[in-house]
Image (cartoon, rainbow, N blue to C red; front, side, top):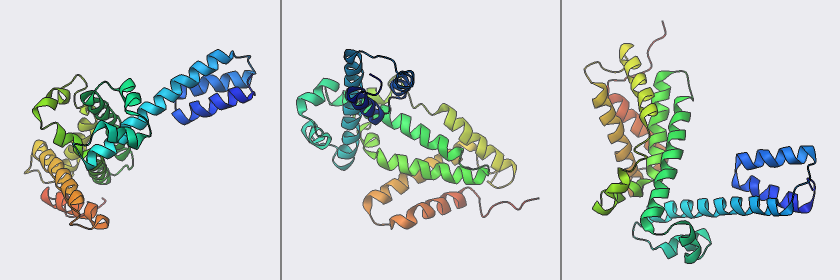
Length: 240
């Protein structure tokens, strides 16, 4: 069964879904040439197809709502290539779909910020990379910020997931503290104020991106220049 067409079809579906646990199990079964019941394989395939469909709906909602916050669920379903009925099998209403988009944002943005932090051993380069990651993530999920300003969605913003950035923010604060200790960032500014400037620059850059008034090829460079100068950075510190 490990090399049968049924097994291979299921393997392909699981691989597409990126369900790593299920994929590892299938690899073990194939390596051991274990006889596997067709019903088990079909069940695994069904679960992974559901995961793929759910993710496709979430991804489509992010794209659609970013362009038009008032877009209908029919528009989201059409973008995802499913029917409205299928969409409601996964999400009972609009707030539930928005909550799923928020969960996707928390996961992907935390990963992006962590990757930016790990991209260099130079604290100044790490800080710059984290600014760029914040801009990219904020731009992709800009609709959520607008949505949470509406009273009916405020409760979602304060849901049990919270912001989910405690660890990332702690690392960011440590970078700023280190750079202040090195004399790279002005000690006249508190870390809290530097964060206000950091967050503000991300929001300003996102607005500029959406307006189209500033060339995309220049905008991140402008953002870093403006932010770095605002906190007293003029150049990399001279190596001792």
